[in-house]
Structure formats: structure tokens, C-alpha cells
Length: 214
Image (cartoon, rainbow, N blue to C red; front, side, top):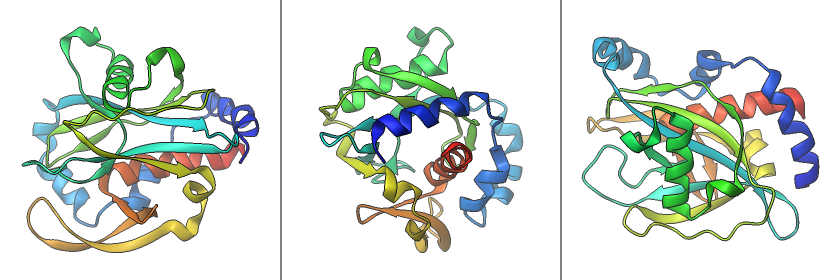
């Protein structure tokens, strides 16, 4: 989709209600609801994070979405695909949008001055890491040159909007969970990478909202 056309449509989602769990359930791992219930009390004291779903034009004015592949490390989100973003810090002035903008600049080198935040999405609790993640939809009207944060980001993935919206890229795959159990989960497949779990759940809500305005 041409980015000019995308821009005309995406602003309309500002006035739409969030879809929350109705969307999230489509890409939820089968064990997630039980896990969330078990950790319900812990979730009340969960750490906070902000992430950015950033859309932008390439050099042909075609719309893209940026995701990142995280480094391999000792943690539950090691080597997973996600949005640029991260943990809330005191300097964010109790504003999770500020967290998402700051972390996006740090992780992929896109200045907050180049990002227009369109809408906050439904926060999502992640039991294995005890985080509540606050996603935001943003757009940059200019072609971007990414600079990855080498300490945390393995690579930057540029996803074509047509691939993002194509239902053929919704798959089922077997993954090893943070509890070392293999399960079949719904997922997206973009650029030969599998996107599942919380990121897939946030993506499907964005996708469902965009369907209403395109």
C-alpha cells in the first residue's frame, strides 16, 4: 500500500474503540489464560514497559512496519521478535508513551521528533517476565535509516504492509516456552521469522483495527 493512502486511513483509528481480549485471543498461546489467572495477584505489581508499532514509507513510498530480533541472552524473551521498546524508567515522567519513544530511539535510532503517535493500544500482561506492556501505534512520514543498538538488537526487520495484512502469513508453529515445554501456538511468519506470544497478540489487535478503516 502506498504510504500516502495508508496515512489517510490510519488516522481514522483514533476514533475507534480498542478490541482488547477479543483480538488478543486469536493469537494467544493455549496455556496463556491459565497462566495469567495463576499470576493475577503478581500482575497487580507488574513492571511496566512501552513499545512502538512504527509504520513508515520505504524509498518507493510503500508502507512498512519495523520489528526487531532481540539478542540471545539469559532471559524469557531471548532471540524473540518484538517491537522496539522496553522498560519504564523514572526519567519517563510516568508516561509510557515517553518510554516507547525513548526506547525506539535507543534501539533502532529513530528520533522521537520523526514519530507521530496515533493511538495507544490495549496493555498486555506478560506472566513469564511479569511485565505489563503498553503498545502504541506510530507513524514516521519520512523514509528511515535505522541504527540498531548492538547490545540488545540482533537485527532489524522491515515488514511490508501487504505481508502484515495477508492472512496467509498467519500460521501454527511449535515453540519451546519459557517453562521448557513444547506447544503448538498461533503465530505470524514475516521475512522467514516466526512472531508469536505477546507480540503476535498486540499485532493482531492493530491488524483488526486497521481492517476497519482500510
